[in-house]
Image (tube, rainbow, N blue to C red):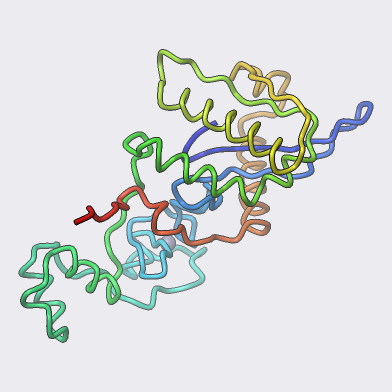
Length: 244
Ligand SMILES: [Zn+2]
C-alpha cells in the first residue's frame, strides 16, 4: 500500500497450487506507470534530468560523463547549461521573439523543449487527497476488470496514528474499489484489511534471492506495462486557473 509504490497481486488458489494471474507495483503520481521505472534512467541509474517527452536520464547519461555499460540510448538534447535565473533563461530563449516579456514559468516551459531539465521525484506526502483520488480513479480504469475476477481482496491495513495520509489512501482505495466493482461489474466479493506484518509471513527467500526476484519482477513489469505519460491533471503541480 503506497502512493509511489502501490503494489497488487492477483492469485488463483486451487488445492495446494497458487498461480499468479496479474501483479504490478504502480506509481499513482506517474499516471499508474510501474514504480520501478518512474525514477530510473534507461541504464538503471537514478534519474536527475527530464526530457520534453517525460523520459528520465541519470546524470551520467545526460551529460555523457560516466555513461554506464547498460546505457543503450543517448539523450537527443543537452542538459540545461545554467541555473534557472530569468536572465539566463532569456539568453537561452534568444530565438523566441516573446522571450523579453515572458514570465519565468513561460521561459522555463519554452527552454524545457530544447534542453534536458533538472528533475526530482515528487514528494508524495505533499500531494492533496483530491489529486490522489483522481490518480487512483484513473489507475482503476485499467485494472478494475482484473480485480473484478477476484472473490476476495485483501488490503494492507495502515496504522491510523503514525501515518494519517496512508490511512486516508487505504480508505480511499477501499471505498473506490467496493463502489466501482459493485456498480460497474456487479461484484459480490469481499474486501478484508490485513496487518502489514502478514505480507512476508512464511517467506523463506534470502535477501539475495529477494533482490534477484525484484530485478526479474521489474523486467516483467516493464514488458507488460509500458510506460505511459501522466495526464497533466495528474501532476502534483497542476493548478486550476481561478475564474473571473
Ligand atoms: Zn543513465
